[in-house]
Length: 240
Image 1 (cartoon, one colour):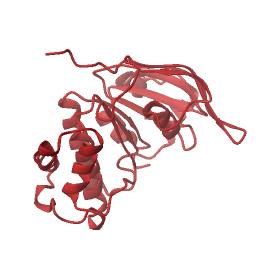
Image 2 (cartoon, helix red, strand yellow):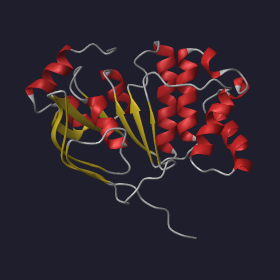
Image 3 (cartoon, helix red, strand yellow):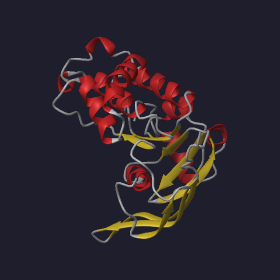
Image 4 (cartoon, one colour):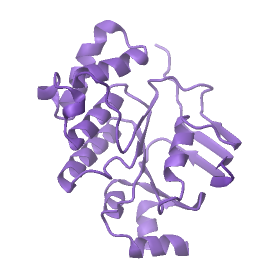
């Protein structure tokens, strides 16, 4: 059996992103490696979402280079879940089956894999319900199931619980933990300091498009090195 392709590390070298005369990401050097859960923190406008979209390939840098360990990432090797997931006008199960189809999964495997993914997030009983009528928490769990069904090596999560109540947010956090435990690299942005403490192994702290800190989570919260990070920890409420 052939060895699986290893996407990571992902290397960013002098990466910038400018649009309409504004610099949103400013000459970032970054290496994203396997194993740890990486959480990106920073104030509004710091560039967290832009950085994740660059890493995922949704945006092209206007300067610098982004390189995976393999030349091209296939659709099922990485995935991304957004704060407000886009649901197709079809059932919960069909949303997952369509993602599997786009990723090249054979037709005969899609239904079984979709149902298994729904079971992992506790949604198997609503497999045939229209996805767009589900609650916000259910839609986010479905989005995670859809991504997890691809068995990605890397999962990017952009503020995945920002619009959810505390109970729904904790359910999503438990799923993120399970995906990580199954072997997927987690890269997540959040405003929620309590969530970052619970989920992060390492912290990237962004300020005005630059990485001011890249360190172990415990060290970051115990003794941040930058004044901006210290002020963020001191002044930011635990729920955004």
